Structure formats: structure tokens, C-alpha cells
Length: 333
Ligand code: A2P
Image (cartoon, rainbow, N blue to C red; front, side, top):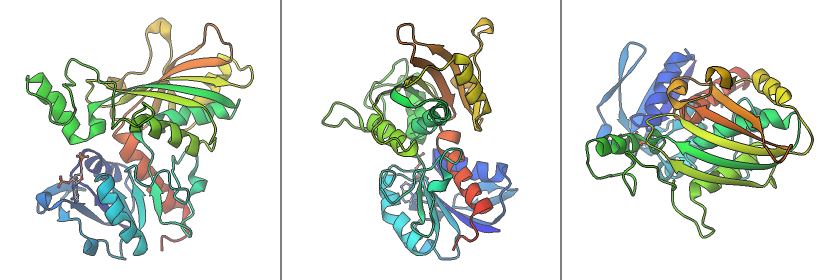
């Protein structure tokens, strides 16, 4: 039985983490819910109980905790995750702050759980939401042919920006000015997620590129990304174009996707079956459809990939990493 702390337990991802720990029926001795001082004393339901939120402080991160799941943003992870790790707690961090550190594993449990080495480092990074749903099908395809190029275009839901993103869509519906995004997301699409960098890409786009290379262990794979916020409450969609180094058939692609854990193929144009955010919300699977060959380059393919960004894109992936360690690590200390 394990003692688990959720840091940021009142946020969009934190609340989902609590829900999923209950849903997966994990062996929990105690669940401690931490957030800012603003939330101290509020309660959250867990297994027919109401758990009281405590303020996240260094003193709360005591050595009797086995796992701390962080979902309170980069600044909070940067400050508190190293303290937790020093106290012997396994940290699963949802922020982007540690993801590209060479000594911190960036993990999707179906792809690279072997990257975790708890004797070397107690912090494990949970990848970016759009990245998780994209690397799952790409890792499957990499088993039958080498990827030589990947291009992403995303259609990202407002819940990816946390509770404030959801509120902004609701504000827009009521004709109110945005408080989270720079422009109204209601009745609009915004081709900017996170800040712009010198090279004209946004930080979100660079995250998708570098995190894909790290998880797939293909550090020189050429990738481009365009990340777009759309007025969808939940579940991200990604249009993925990929090129491979040898001839493969659509049948082979479909076959390997269908055999891969965590992926469901929804692809029957004749009956209008393809993945959509409304259908993906509430599930852990990554849904893949619209799989087709490029009309000009026989080595290039396209697919449309949809997943619940709060579940597989964030909370479920983090909880699945924890579940993997509960099942595989001989000791958490
Ligand atoms: P709180 O609700 O008390 O502000 P979201 O991504 O949905 O915006 O959620 C952010 C999460 O991070 C919330 O649980 C929020 O708690 C938490 N958080 C924000 N600032 C702090 C802080 N200074 N200390 C601890 N938790 C924080």
C-alpha cells in the first residue's frame, strides 16, 4: 500500500489524477491533496470520503510519501519537486520544466518505461499532452519502418490551458473578454500556444519536436509542428504526416496500430468513422483514423489522432507511470 501526494489537486489535471487513482483502484494507504493557500480547507471526494486540501509547503513533502504527482505548473515543480526527490519521494511531474534534462526520463509507459532508473533519479517527467498522443502511433510505426520525417498540426482543446482555459471559452460564449488567452477563443482558432521563440516557432511546437525525439530515441529525426488552440472544451486532435525509409502498406500500418497497446483504430470512411474529440473524451486510448498514403510520395502517410488531453495527455499517463512502478519496482525507497 502506498502513500501518494497530489500537488495541484484542485486544478484541471490534478482533479483528474484523483479521479483516475480511484478509477484504477490502486493500492492507496493514504492520499494527500495539496494546492495553494487559497484552497486550504476545501474538500475533494475520494472513495466515499471527503479529503481536505492542505497548502503545498516543503514541510508537507515528508519521507513517508511514496509518490508525489505534480500538476501545479512549472514554477511550483521547479521549487518543490527537487525537495520531494531529496526526501526519497518518487516524483511524477506534469510540467515541462524537467522534460528535456538528460538525466530525467520522459516516459510514456507503453513506449519507454525502461528509461526509468530510480537509483539515478527520483524525478520522472510526464510528456506534453499533444506529444503523448502523437508518439504512441509513431512508436508503433517505427517498429515496421524507420521514420525519416514527421509534421504535426494540432487542434488543441481549451482544457489544455487548465481551468482558466475552460473558463475563457465559457466567457467568450457569454460575450465576455478573454482572461487566459490573448484573443477570444470562442468562434475562433488561435495559431499560438505558449510564447514565441526567436526562430518563429512557439514553445509548445518546440516541446512537441524535442520531446518526440527524446521519447522515440531519435534525436536527429526532422520534425515540424504547428500548434493551434481551437474552441473545443476537451480532447486534442493532431494531424500527423510521416515519411518512412521503405515501402510499407496501409494494411501493415493499420495492423501494427491495432496490435499496439493504448491505441484504437477508428478508420472507416464508408461509414463515416473517424476519431473526434467528443468521442475521445473520457477514455485513455489514443484514437487513430483517416490513415492514408500521400498522393505524390509513396513513402509518406497521413493520419488523424485524437485523445483526451486531460486523461492520456496528462493525468492517466502520470498515473499509469505510477502504476507501472507499483507493479515493477522492488521498492520505492
Ligand atoms: P489552487 O486551486 O489553490 O490555485 P490549473 O492548471 O487548472 O490552473 O490548476 C493549477 C493547480 O496548481 C491548482 O491546483 C492550483 O491550486 C495549483 N497551484 C497554483 N499555484 C500554486 C501554489 N503557489 N502552490 C501550490 N499549488 C498551486
